[in-house]
Image (cartoon, rainbow, N blue to C red; front, side):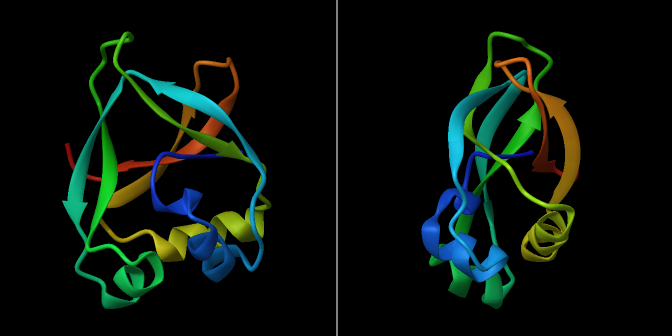
Length: 110
């Protein structure tokens, strides 16, 4: 499973990254806070249509949470998502509010 709070929820980004539109369900990522990061990679900006993307950082405060969508993806699709995400992000496994665990892209630096 992959939890997205940002551009991977966009249909056009999904088609470019995965070759298909993903089906998902709403969930939340507890203990994280949302901010924005400037994207320097022109291909990623072209794909998303945005020069700034959301990014999350762990707060350790359980009542802070980030809303998003959890998607079922294959290991090959995860590899494609890894290529789409720039070096500002790293993929980690995290528990969601629903009790499920999913991969999520978080800030690579604290």
